[in-house]
Structures are given as C-alpha cells and as structure tokens.
Amino acid sequence: MVKDVRKIKTERDIQQALLTLLTQKTVRQITVADICQTSLTSRSTFYAHYIDKYDLLENMVAVHTTMFAQQVHVRFMQMIDGQIDELVQGLLADMADKRPAIQILFTIHEDHADLQANFRSLLLKEWQRFIAPYGDAMQVPADLMATMGTNVQMTVLEWTLAHGDVSNAAVADAIDTIRKAVLLQIQPATN
Figure: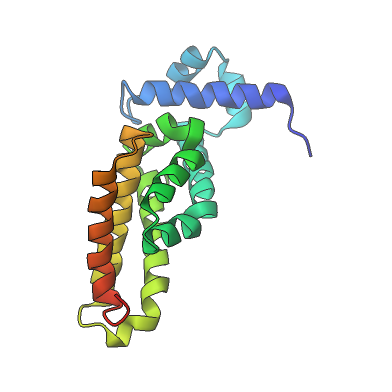
C-alpha cells in the first residue's frame, strides 16, 4: 500500500517540529500547540496522525529502534571481528540523514520512549547471546562482560553520532584494544 505523499510530508513536518522543540524545551514543557505552531499544521491535523505528543515521540523512537534492530547483528559482529573502521562507516551509513534526530532522541528518557535505552538493550542481548556458549568456562561473571561489551559499543555509537565521519587510526586502535580486553575475558583460549 502506497502512503499518501501529503501524509508523509505532514508527519515529517510534525516530527521535525518536535525535534526542533526538544532542543529548546523538555518533553513535558512542549505542548501540542507548540508542535502545531512550529510545524505549521493545525491541531486537527496533528490529532489525525497522533494521539498526543507522547504518541508522536514513541512513534519516532520505535522507527529508529526498528532501524537499529535491523542492523545490530551486523554491527555487533564487526566489533567482535575487530572491523572498527567498517563499524564506524556502517553506523554512519545506517544513520545517514537521521543522525541529528538520533542525537536529540538519545537525550530523551521517557517511559516507553527511550531510544538510548532501546539501543543499549538490543546490544546487550547480542552480547548475552555471544557469551552464552562460553559462560561456564569464564572466570568473570557473564553479565559483567555482557554489560562491559555493551558499554564499549554504546560508547563507539555515541562517539560516532557526535563526531561523524572521522577516520582516525588512534581511535580505531583504542577501540580495538578495549575490544580485545573484553574478548580475552570471554574467550581466553582463542585470543
């Protein structure tokens, strides 16, 4: 089913208005009237698309979470395999024109609308799946290593969001050193 172009443009304008307002106010301070004024849409048009501002926010977070979920395994394996440049370039390609929106949404921590927590949760599940076969042989708790691995990847993701396309061998080497240290605790015999 093809979506009406007007509907797509209206939703884009409303979403962009919310992002703009989120750089100036908290979610709780923003009103539907603010969103309508900024997006140049009427209240009835807003309500034809969203139940309220939280529905709008949750929708936006869900779209970005789904986008990340589709690529999380690939990006996870690039980290595991030490393909740091490919990881950073892949993240940039995945985010492309969505980077500013993701940066803004990473600062919002509402119930049912926390993009950063969603990304972290997806990465943690990948680490838990990866570690599961090694769990009994590990000297350190598996949940600790899963959390540490997740934190490393979230740091790379957030750094990439903030800095964009910056190829830096020293950064890649630092990430790789940390990656190896985490993997050494999980797979001591193979590293």
